Image (cartoon, rainbow, N blue to C red; front, side, top):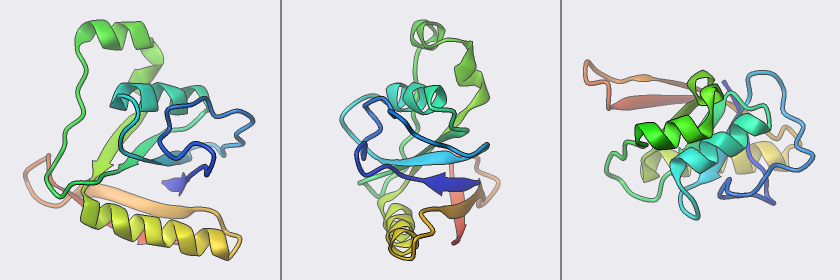
Length: 128
């Protein structure tokens, strides 16, 4: 997937006013400021395919929400994805986004897939 970020909304907690997302793009955001579900709903409302949360911890974090929260968010959240990267992977992605933006590209492509039989462990492959 193609991943972009917005300097005026680094946490993904504010509306993406005037954001021009291409079909299938995901939004990279930093962890914190609001819930994972709020980040996801904001990205969904902007037309994103999902959210890549650039984590600040090296342990695995699994976002969760209860049924009432999901119902309040609306049916659309079933059509988008959220992935939380560990700090080590997040740092690599952030450096790649910095490089892409400095070259005028503004986005990177990520392939996120299970690294093993454990579904809670992921591998990140990147390209600009």
